[in-house]
Every structure is written in C-alpha cells, then in structure tokens.
Image 1: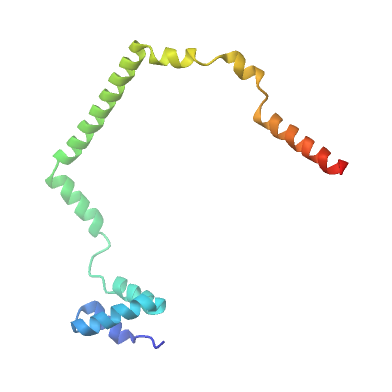
Image 2 (image 1 turned 135 degrees about the horizontal axis):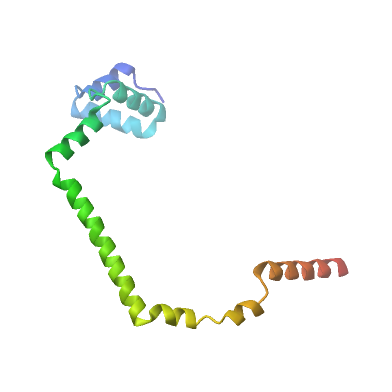
Length: 132
C-alpha cells in the first residue's frame, strides 16, 4: 500500500481537496494507520486555537451566566433534602428495624468461615489424590 504524501494530508486538513479526493483520502485513512497518525499530528500542529482557549471559555460562561453555579448548588441542596427526608421516613416506618431483626447473630457464628470451608475442601481433595 502506498502512503499519502504530507502535502496531500495538509491539503485534506486545509479543506482544499475536491469531494472525490477527500473521499479517497478518508478511505485511505480507514485502511492505513500510519497516514491517519500523520493526519492527527498535522491536525494538532495546524490547530489555530490557543492553549488557554478552554479556560477562557469556561470563565466567560461563568461570568456571563452566574445563575449556572447557583442552579447547580440549589440542585445539590435539594438532593440532600430528599435523601434526608427519605431516611427519616424509613427510620420512622421501622424498615431498618425489620432488616436488623431478620438477621440472627447466632446463625452467623454457627457457620464456618469461607476460608475454613475452602481449606477443608482442599484438604479432602489432597487426601483423595494421595490415596490413589
């Protein structure tokens, strides 16, 4: 496969190619990773945006729309109020008590731990293997 020249890729980046030529370059990019990487490099190199563009844009939005921050804070406060209210309702209804009452602490103490169960099974497997 023949690679595209840097001039062809630069023409594609600048948009000076015809539609047919652009389609050919795009088809080539889908098949050739090296040319696509060269395209990405040239695209970054030719970028006309300053490095501070993002910060300046965010600052401008915050200055022009101060209610944006206030809306965000009020939504967070509303979520906290809903969560606190739901917690109070559940506590008053006894849901948490029902959950703790359904757990019998003696049943947890009577059962061997998972580690003990695995060790027992491993030991019995080793015994079977050595007896053969």
